[in-house]
Length: 40
Image (cartoon, rainbow, N blue to C red; front, side, top):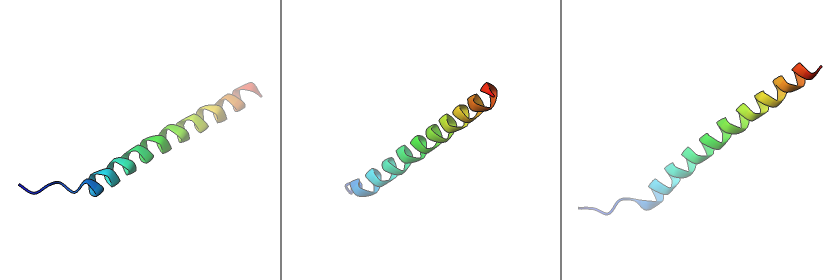
């Protein structure tokens, strides 16, 4: 059985993490933006 390509797995994991962090950050920005609108 061939050994799995660890670099490829690592790359996919990194992309997944980045995607997750990006969505989290964008949602935080959205929340802060709506808070700003509410406070005015």
